[in-house]
Length: 248
Length: 248
Image (cartoon, rainbow over all chains, first blue to last red; front, side, top):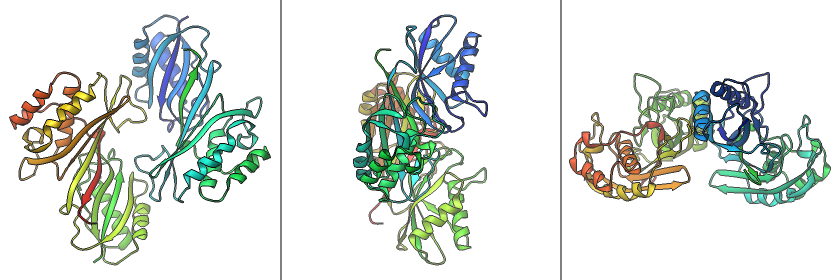
């Protein structure tokens, strides 16, 4: 059975998340339905990562097997045709070898979190960013965030319902970048815990507001205790940006 | 009566345009209703420019008179409160002198047109950009666009229903900038004709596709004839970016 790697962009607003769930429409189920419409058989679409309800993706990676071979462009265009009018776009489909697995072969994942730091509510970015009225010190956020880089027990920044085997993860990099009222928090790791990015962003916002210092963030990390976490940032500001593979 | 200058961001999707019309909701009418809710009296909100249905604004300038003086922050916050949940945000309100007029005092207007040049349909930018599948040559578009700079009779790029007294306008600058699949066309002028930017963008897209050369664009301009125009670009890719004033 030919295997295809997909790169998928989606607006997370209308979905319960990437993963198929009984309580509402998911991106995974939508892509699976489109694949079935293309080939006439049920198939499972495996994503590089799960995302929460409301989280967006610029380039989620996924793979699926089809019973017959189609040209890459045919797969991409047919999926997009069947996905209409849902806000899910297959940017590319590419034939890959059977040992490629979107989740298990992934060596690095990148997320971006968008904050708009202004008083006025959002109109063009409504549902696409977290608006924070209080003036944030992005330099202080960036500086404090560096204490999180490296291999740590991230229990503080882990949802209680997280199913990962261990809270120990390696954060490869995190950067807080400001351009005018626009603040972007970019982080990369091999893998992330459930709610890890949103928990980190919520805590960094406390630093930005001046309520926490760098030492408070370090103490929260060292506590290895969920109750030491700042408020979890809303899902709507989070974007799955990229999944990297050794070869694909 | 105190006069306020407003800077307004809006998602043009749900509106018939900036200007009050009988056939549907307008941004102007929404801001006027919010102002009436604030002060209890009807007032007219004057914008720096009209926009078509579906056209967005990052920073439309406007002014209005209120029967009583309020603090600038009070005006901004109260308008935003009353504008909910419509996708219109008052970014700032500022007390100005009586000789300030958002339309007549404006010395330069800036628009940006967004094209996404890719095969896949848009999800996150649906309704916010023009998707063109054919590969566009942005450098050729930029080069050709320079024939439009300066003072010309823009009859070719003017809607038949345009109410301007003359088709002669001075285009201060136009630039076509590509970053990956993202193409932005920025133009500035003291004022624009009805559909001028969308007509220019539609014609430049013909250049980008290789159907027109620079000489064809020049010939279209020189024709001073609406029928020489390329297809008009859709409204949803257009953004009113900025209105400049000598003093404000």
